[in-house]
Length: 622
Image (tube, rainbow, N blue to C red):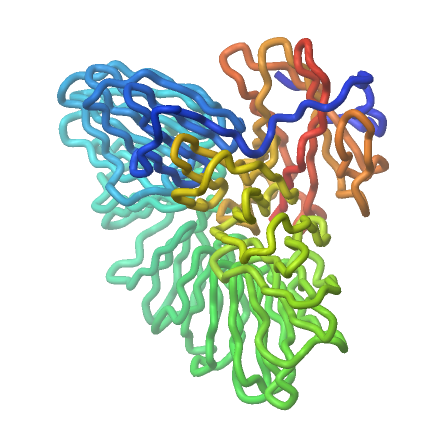
């Protein structure tokens, strides 16, 4: 339960108690003295599951807890980034990472899980059981059931599902976990789902369903058109016209311009070869761009950013803004990742960096060395004469780190970037533009893994973790030598002989939107969803604003990360139906909000315990 946001500069002090903070730890350990069989421990996304004999133990990074379920010897487990299902005889159980509870589903012997094998990123699960279709959401943690005919068609992937039952279409969005019906004139021929976009394609009409807006739109079909499809969009084109659908915006867009080919096909955009040269389709903005460059230009593209190089110039394209900026110099090499790109000056070898969030090129500072930077989806690491600089996609700033003997950390498929040397680990928090350091515990070379938004480190007997959506180092002590380690997109696990250590790479307060750290984009005009674990009798204050220039120490509570002058707040009560409360924040479709980013933090007062300040969740409005 919650109340509307209101200005409250002193709101986070309202629940003050003179007791030490007791925030749940980021590392949580499960134990079995009889031993752990490493193949029995699996995980993706926010979830780690351990089949410990007759008990299934599941750790959720969102709840920072282990949860248990008694299972039979024949139980079958399917796990995805945000949910899992335990198929156990006449009762199946769904588990949602955001809710932290097992939800039973009575089934018959003919029940069938419809999600294709390999769809590890799905946040929706579909179960067909005779004339009933059951759906489970990793955000709501509940099953919804509806009748279907024996001839219904279906498709499910990531955050959207579609069914077609004659002329009745229905779309399911993972965020609300509800079906949305549409009656059409002609049954569709094809169903396609991915990301937030569901398409029901018929001979004369195309119907698009958006998980972001939970709504249907329709457009006339383009007979005989070529197509391209990716995470949040689909494009149809022939020599006369282009038609595109954006699941992010929940609408179609048409251009009276023909196309010959799709030159780049990424999560959030496409580059299309037209008679006017290369034109971009941005699923984030739901619009086509002006012509950018000749069709023969050299293209490097990834997720929401691209470089398009021609003789004497390099154009940086932003799908987040649907604009491009021109760097008027010849380039010897370019590359792109997520929301960051670079081009090397052919004359000096120095790197120029481009941000898809600001839409601007950044000149290399005087201390930057020639050569390509190491890029991640949110930053570029540029070696300097005294250490390294982190170029931030959010601000366009290059933040220095003065340190000797650095080994750089990061990869182009992940958000995290950092470094280590003989004395310290360093991680760059791209949300606040600050370097975060952690002293080394061992002189031996560390074991470091980075995947998507999570980093895990083994440094002698100390294990450490850092999350791009958390921005804090957290540590634990290995109870015995490591047997196996695996870093997933939003959490990590370390297995020893008799322990499983699980790390939460997200803050205690999480947001359904993830961009630019990960895929889920939030569009202005929608409702932002936040999740905060609260127990029975707990109270909380949920506050939003801008990040403070530096953390503000609040003795006994932790660190206030928000600027007190910008705060607005609401009081939050626990949800009687579960251990996690969902906080809904409607955001106006205001042009003034586009490109703005907001930070959110919670002060939690547990029943009978000491209050504590959570880490921060962020929301980038596009």
